[in-house]
Image (cartoon, rainbow, N blue to C red; front, side, top):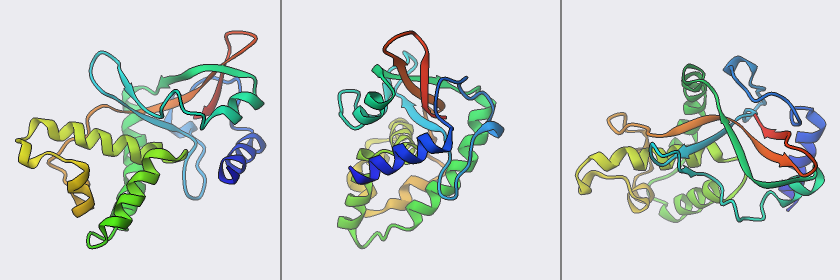
Amino acid sequence: MIFLLVVISQSIMSGHTGFKQPLSKFSDVIQFPDTIDLHAWHEVDDSGKISDYDEDSDMFDEIKFINKLSGNMVRVRMPHEEEQKAFRFIYKIIKKKIKGLIPEDQEMTKRAISYWFCEPGNCFTRAFIVSKMLGSRKFPPTERITFEKIYKNPAILLDNKIPVIGMRFGSAGWKCKSNDKIWYEYG
């Protein structure tokens, strides 16, 4: 709860959130020392079905309450060329996180993966892991990425022969309760 309040207060005080235009260029992304103001999610297939934070979760209730927002998260993708620039930048951060995991300590790896999947501020890593798992589906079952395989060997996520499928970058937020404007909290 304290972490979320710090994130909310930093976000509000930084002036990077609000009723603004969604990002269209990576050069417009605000960069902080350990992250950037951008959202990442994963499209499961060509139908547009999205895998992201659990929409029924109460993790964003404070943001929505403070800013008088409602409904499910609204996402706006950056153009493909700009997503590629974002991916190159984000991959360096993800690679460092994954290389920091110790294969011999599977319990620590499980806790890290769980944290990346459940806590705000980890959308890039979560989307990357899901995208790599999806990218491995074209391989024989014995070569597919599973959580069990990640726990035993986190470096499997950095295998370049397994493509990243469906990872998206852009802005995300919610609709204002009193009008149709979108409050972009991320990106």
